Image (cartoon, rainbow, N blue to C red):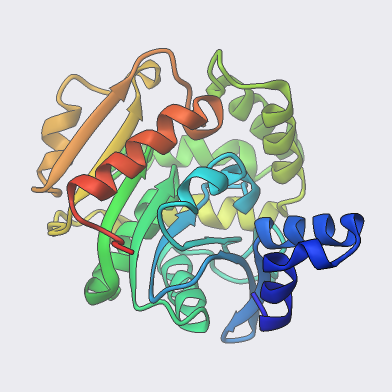
Length: 292
C-alpha cells in the first residue's frame, strides 16, 4: 500500500463517504502486482506488510481467486501473498514446459519481488508438489507447509498417469476437464464456487493443462527426501485415500499434523472456509510461525 493510500484509509473521515469507501475496498482487495521469471510475467497480490508471509499456491487450472474466502481471516494473522502460477490466471501463458520446478521458481520470483524472506506455503492440489519443490530449492526460505488435499507421494504409476493425461491431448479436453472438476466438488461447494472453478479452467490453454499434468508425471519430483519443517496436511476423506495414507505422508514429513475431513470435496477451502481458516491459524500458532 502506498503512503498516500494508507493516509487516505486511516483518515477516511476527511474524505467524502463514497471516496473513503472506495479506498478502503482497494486496500482490502490487496495490491495487485507483476514480476517476471525470465520472460514470463507473473501476477500476484500482496496483503499487508512484513518480511515473512503466508503464500497461497493454487492448483491445476485454477488461479489466486480460489483463495477469496481465506484472505479476510488469514490477513488478520499474517502477511498474505497469493499468486497466479505461470500459465494461469492473469500470468503469462507462453508455449513452454510447465514443470513443478518452473512453478517453484515462479513462487520464489514473486517472494523476491515482494521482499519476503521467509514463507509458510499453502499448496492446494498441484500446489502441494510445487511447495515441496520450492522447499527443495529454497529450504532456508521455507518456514512450514500446509498441504490442501494434494500429493506428497505419487498418486499413480506411469501407466496410470498416461491414462489420466490422454483425454487432455484431444479436441474434447474441455469436456473431460469440466466433468472431472465437477466430480471433485464436495456437497458443500456453493454454486458460485463451481462457476469460479469452471471459468478458470476454460481460461487455461490446452498446452498449459497438458504440460502441467506431464510435470506431475515427472518421477524426479517424487523422491523421498524429507521435509524437515512443520507440515499440516488437510485431506478430504471422500477422496478415497489408501488406508496407509498417513504412513505414506509421514515418511517424507516427520513433523506432520494430519487432518482428514469427512464430507469435504477436493476444493475443501472453498467449501468450508471458516473451518479451513481456523485450522491454518491454529497450525501457525501451535508452531510459532509468522509471528507479528
